[in-house]
Image 1: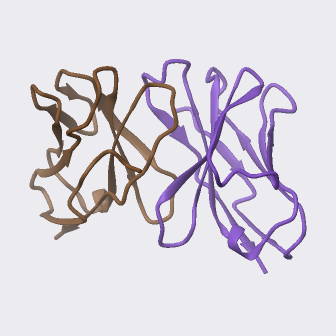
Image 2 (image 1 turned 180 degrees about the vertical axis):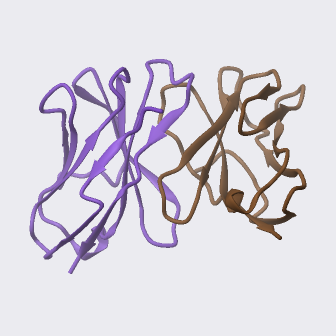
Length: 114
Length: 109
């Protein structure tokens, strides 16, 4: 069964450092997403990406965040200057154009900012 | 904010059917009902979705009331591995998902 692959599974970074979280969506999917989940809290939407541009973003997705699809397979989330409160699980997801088959989520990257 | 209401927790005996309810009284005509689950801190896993008709797949059945204001996810023979948080989400296909608190299902031996 096709999977969304995320790397690394765990990243520890110092406050103020830049991090890039990587995702390989399912190959025939056209919508891509990032969500995050702070420990013990709900899964929160960050951003959706379609046709090489952001289609929707939440209030969380401020200027410190950016997304990119640098080639035909990878989808990345960059946090420019990490804060302690950015510590969370970050999930990448992808879906078909109509979303009729649901979204497929990756297994996540646990980001710990120290 | 999530547009659904679910009980925070439920228990089910192993081998029995687990029936998870969801209220979505403000659902609009073009919104689907999606069900996902999350085991520990893994990524949410798609289970099933529907618009009006009842749906069944290898994982579960989804029963949607005629007025579409509520639905029930049925796991016909729950196993210990079905212990998870189950999320009922309504949205238009292709749009972002808004997760609520979900129902924490505990399957007990």
